[in-house]
Amino acid sequence: MLRPLLDGISRKAARHHRSKPFAMRNNAPLVSFTFDDVPDSAYTNGAAVLEKAGIRGTFYIASGTCGSADTYWRVIDRDQVGALHARGHEIGCHTFSHIGVDRLDARALEEECERNRRMLCEICGDLELTNFGYPFGRASLPRKLQLLQRFDSCRGIYEGINAGVIDLAMLRVIELYDRTLTPAKLRRVLRETRDCNGWLIFYTHDVAEKPSWIGCSAQLLQATVVAVQAEGIACLPVRDALTAIGYQAAGNRSAKRQSENWRSRAFTAFR
Image (cartoon, rainbow, N blue to C red; front, side, top):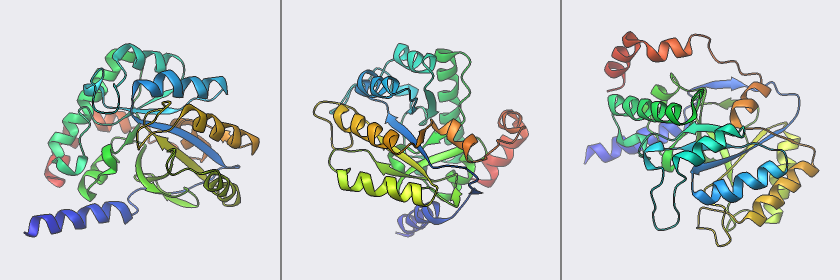
């Protein structure tokens, strides 16, 4: 009975503990469009809407699920992942098998991320995988601390606008869902983003005529893009938004990631 209680405390700590604080230094507000899992409709419809507006997005992909199907959608295949990368969109890490990281120990999480990196590099060639999205939004404090050693940022599913001193290990979002993003809410979050000189990250899954409960229609995505651009707010993938807010990755991150000594310490510290 104690284990569920401790797990719940760890998940709550992951949400509220500012594990990677960073003081934003952007000169103007920013917006990013992100897609989780990534359904094929996000590729065919979502990417097309962004590209027509001259925008690129961030697509968090669990490569072990590519080409698979579930109740709501089919996940994009390897060729579509490669096409997204070739067209300038950012490919982010979403683990290999799309599993909640709070269910993993340190070694399993390292293996999930490394398998995903190898597969995506095989598909995309020159890919550098620097940003992470938590599958299902689930995290524990030990796994969150472990991930910040590998990635520049980790994006969650908790609502909010990133402004001032933010947690790069748990970036806040606004749902881009037909069932939750009303015109009034869109106007409000854009006004708040401008007022606080913030970074607004939209996230969704499928982009379909009849979207799932965690998706949006192409019409809503297009209306959101139009509203953002009407405000004169720059739209950048996460990797470029990080640069815009003044973040610079540690120059030795790749070396640290590949270091057997670091892995040995991580497995001991986060087990």
